[in-house]
Amino acid sequence: QVQLVESGGGLVQPGGSLSLSCAFSGSLFSFYVMGWYRQAPGKERELVAAVTSGGSTNYADSVKGRFTISRDHGKRTTSLQMNSLKPEDTAVYYCNARRGLADAWGQGTQVTVSS
Image (cartoon, rainbow, N blue to C red; front, side, top):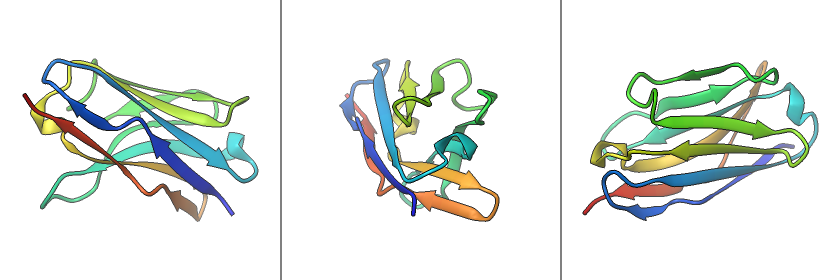
């Protein structure tokens, strides 16, 4: 049973930075594709960034060049470094672990970008 716990959300001014972290508990971390999704009020959940076990990454066009996803196999964590934040980045951010049909979600962490 995979469990994911996010941390690091909060309130930041436009142009600022935040780092999110996702702790993975369970087995076979290295076999999972790890991702960060977000959901703003009234909008559908969308993929922000994902990283494969081999380190390949993909990003939503809206965050390319500003966000960086990474994973640490020893600590079994997945991080999202967010720079140059914009008000439109405000959302609940969710960590996701996916392997075949197996799919796990964290509880979410709020990120608010506002002056």
